[in-house]
Length: 237
Image (cartoon, rainbow, N blue to C red; front, side, top):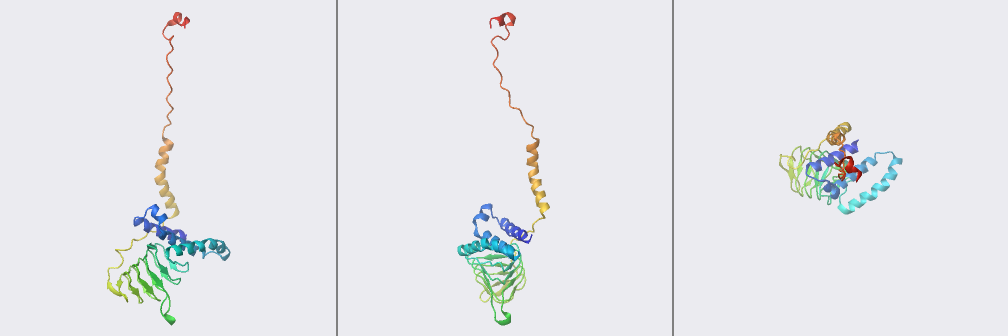
């Protein structure tokens, strides 16, 4: 169910931001995110089940990486609600952790940094906005509801609700990411989804099934020329 829940949250945020069905199909962003979700789900299966699925998944993943420049490895731990604001050159380290409802703009890099025991990949909280061209390196923590400005280079922890910018990045505000991030919603239970479908479809179905069936009008026959002449007149017809 984790795959379905995360995909629902991803798509729900896109729809809340105004995406139409054509956008979901033609924009490479949803395809990149969905491919990551499927790849991560496949790697959680038993080994014997992984092999045939990966034979299909890996070429498709490689094709998307070539076309978009986006790298979302299945080993990265990314919660539901991820949105890519353009996919160009978005690179995430396999060791990175990203929370719910995060926004990654084009040119974002979330990579390994540091030396010795301090070397590692970032841990990013929920509802974090990372602007175009921003770079986040090292075993650092980016707090919940933080925002990282365009082209910033972040190598130190960022507090919850902080806005950072510059090279190296410094806190410039505490307004957070509320203006940049739409919050996702949890997927309703399957029963609620079916009930919602029934509530919407039942009235139309009921109208079709209860509509009275009207018989086609009978064609009127032309009056006989002998009508009204009586027995004597009818004998000459």
